[in-house]
Image 1 (spheres, one colour):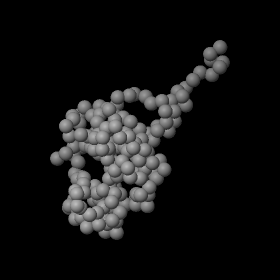
Image 2: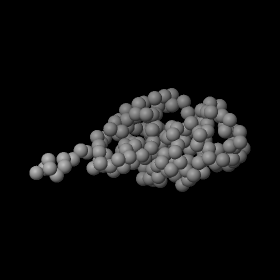
Image 3: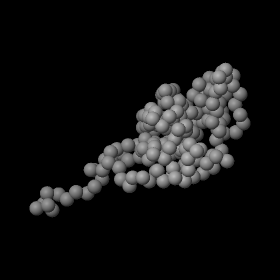
Image 4: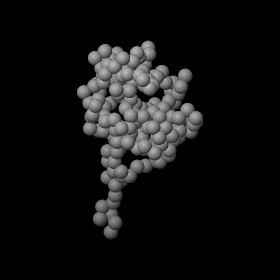
Length: 175
């Protein structure tokens, strides 16, 4: 069974990601049994039947918008965002919008070309699960979440900047 990082621990992954092949049509594709993460197009095309299932998640491509799911967020236990290449950072913005503007509280998973160097920053924008590349060590990737001990700026995971979190002596103490 494939393993992922979820909530800072390595766990077994019982979700499968459905990818559309050439010629597949979102409206008519048959979904496999079990926990399945479907493309946004499939969710939108088959939403009337899929909303009754509790074992369906949705994945967004890096060129799709989080707002497409805003009315469906309570029905989704998992949303995944695909990183087609290491250098494509659009997924960071999608994750941040889901967490801050749309208030999504479920599992937010990074899939695709996900590497250790990205994990710390992905967590800062709201990801709590990571399906790292299978050709890399997941144990090593887990260490990426603790590469830095402190953050300076605000983000989804830290609402207060460092200068407001550090106690500073007042003017009298300095004199």
